[in-house]
Length: 144
Image 1 (cartoon, rainbow, N blue to C red):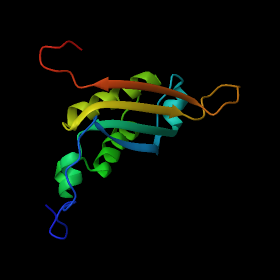
Image 2: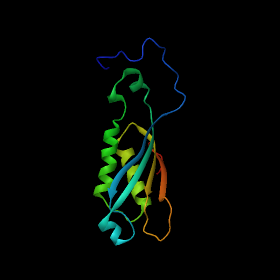
Image 3: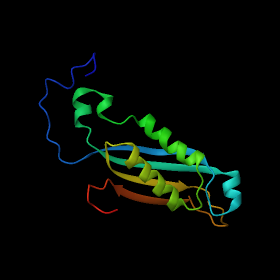
Image 4: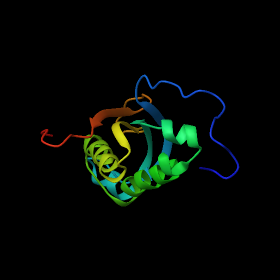
């Protein structure tokens, strides 16, 4: 427990009605992904949103980061994939991020990952293409 706080006492403990959610919105990175070789050479801006289902009641009651997930670590993990790996498809990039989150951060029960490519190399004008995937941690004996 944090030395400066005594949790939320004297208030009574609340009832959990569903999993808590941590959202990281519009994280911005520079990565080299795309079907065209120029995209993988020159790179471009990418945006990532995360919507994570996590039980954070203990962290909220005890004011203890060790009972939650440090969002700076989430950002750094996504940044490594976007900026150090290269994929042709936005779908593959999105799947890779979702898989990494569930593998590396054991407190995450379910992850929704949205990856936006804001400037696809087409002669059409729109705000970009977004791929969204939701993945849940599989339980023992359950198939993928």
